[in-house]
Image (tube, rainbow, N blue to C red; front, side, top):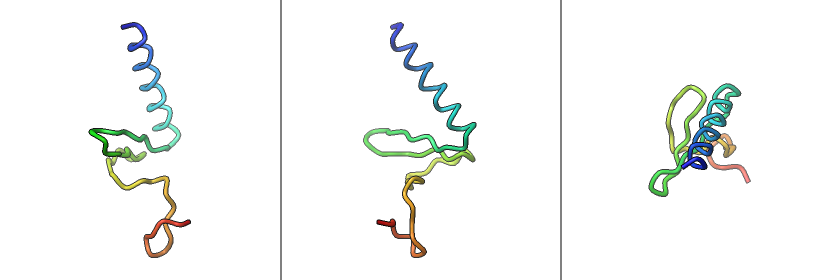
Length: 59
């Protein structure tokens, strides 16, 4: 139980730091990826993938 508490605390601390730095948090639920953007919006669109002018992923 102690290890779970330590892990949970560490994960929350990392999430808070990401928010402070403006970095999106990534989550997985039932095999689906979700991203929490710095403004609090939840999306399935990967904010880490750069897109070209047509909205297609850059290679």
